[in-house]
Length: 151
Image (cartoon, rainbow, N blue to C red; front, side):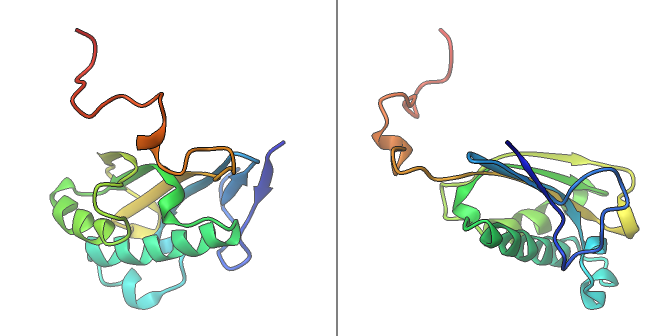
């Protein structure tokens, strides 16, 4: 049964939704923008790289509330107001993950985001289970890296 959570350190959502939805297998965090975080120094910087870095730190904090970390993230959606900022965003984003262990990701351009933000990030994390393999490479169900799909 899912639990719907609003983080008390963030402004209450002004939309019909929750900051986080958690169950025994996953943690889903709604799109987070710099406007959702009360940090005036970054809000007025209009720098997509700085926004990304600050949002990722906040997402990391939210995951810790559920005893998870960014290594548990399996999917990320990023919305940018300008895809020309993608290199700045990628540089900041990459700092938060172990090389070669990046979550599945979608990145799109949106004409406008809440509060004049340049970046919005949504994520989904998977809870670790004692019976799950510690590394996907050890699982018999994985597809080898050389497999490019159906023949």
